[in-house]
Length: 396
Ligand code: GDP
Ligand code: MN
Figure 1 (tube, rainbow, N blue to C red):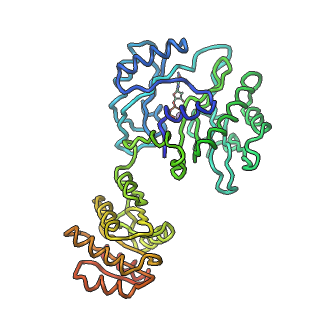
Figure 2 (figure 1 turned 90 degrees about the vertical axis):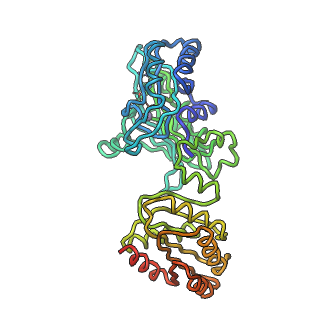
């Protein structure tokens, strides 16, 4: 589950990570009130108005602007709220902005120039350990840094037995070229960040930029936080931060029905039980000349109700030209699944795309008979390749 920047910063701050302070606002009037309140708390006269959507690159798309007085706060908030923000990370249609974060300006002049760094915490899948990834080249697109100047990206692996050790936090500060107060600030920042990552059961933190202010404070200016969905049951307060407006509506509906569904761009709908079989099915569809329209794992209990819910979800996608059902009947018997498919089909009246059903496992033969004798426009298959060939035939 991804959080908005303002929510991510709240999570960070609750574990002692220093942040650029801000208040979220739904209307231009609220933005002005927020700005006044921040001025009281921080003494800042300038504010940044930042679109809150689940996508990065907002600055480039015109979703982050500096306001030098309250009139500007109002006009900028008015421009940004309701706009369709298009950034390098959104689709071509962009994302509708429902709210803005009014934040203190932290790029004020002082004894030194403000400096931007990049810091993320994530799982290194090669070593199976969490790591801190960081760079002096903050504020920019990290993919570009990785491509053009990979030697400017550093990694610090976290041993799960010890956690991040003090010398490692100092190494981060050293490699970022810091000294004095800023060095101390960075070691505290990184230590708190890793603690926040572990305690919140996050799967990714990306703080770009982390800022050294002109008076040597280290703060998070941006925050991309993803919480591991599988751990949400023990973080009810984070679960309440979910913003369904930011998520794919079909995926949200699928989740509410207990189906594991990911929307894709292709033309063959898939209904499969088990994630591994679902991946193999998608491969086979590709080999047969199609493109999967979705990943859908209906789970262990493929009864009529779930099968119907799954059909309905798949058919919401107008690009779907065929549906491949590939179910392995282990615990759930194939004949029960077949009956579920027939019942669901009859319940739904007409389905305008051909359906190919492959049922393998317990009672597969009875299941095939059930499908073949149903009188419906459903083709059965026993072998995996046979199913793929049938998909190919209907697409041709
Ligand atoms: P992103 O573009 O979605 O990654 O949004 P960020 O939160 O990273 O902000 C984009 C850019 O806005 C930053 O890289 C900064 O250059 C700028 N910015 C953010 N906060 C401030 C601020 O307080 N003052 C000024 N002048 N610029 C800021
Ligand atoms: Mn950023």
